[in-house]
Length: 135
Image 1 (cartoon, rainbow, N blue to C red):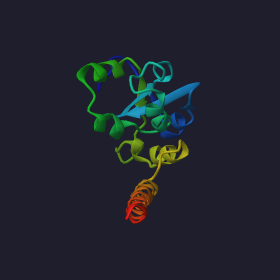
Image 2 (image 1 turned 135 degrees about the vertical axis):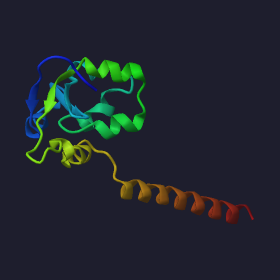
Image 3 (image 1 turned 30 degrees about the vertical axis):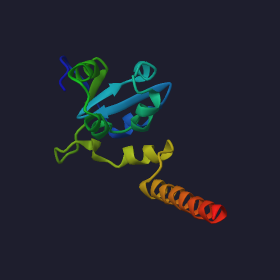
């Protein structure tokens, strides 16, 4: 995703400050996007985007498999680039996005697996006791 013109560089720490509805920035590839005005327009709702605000949303964006139109539209929100570390790698590789997912209430795999197990156990118990009461 390229954006023409001279672009300002932002550190990951600068992006991290913009993690709320009033100022929502995210990293997409090596670009910094200000998606504040787009939150209410996103077809999946703002709750899909908020876990990535203030962090790197690249994997989430790619995993969904957005259309070419969506990729093109994302370019309209680019405000700059992520400042690279001295090693030349992108500074966006920090675990900040994971912290934000937890902050915004995403269930971890363990919790969802436990909930699934509980529901299955309740169903099996119900069927077992229902059959015993019918007999």
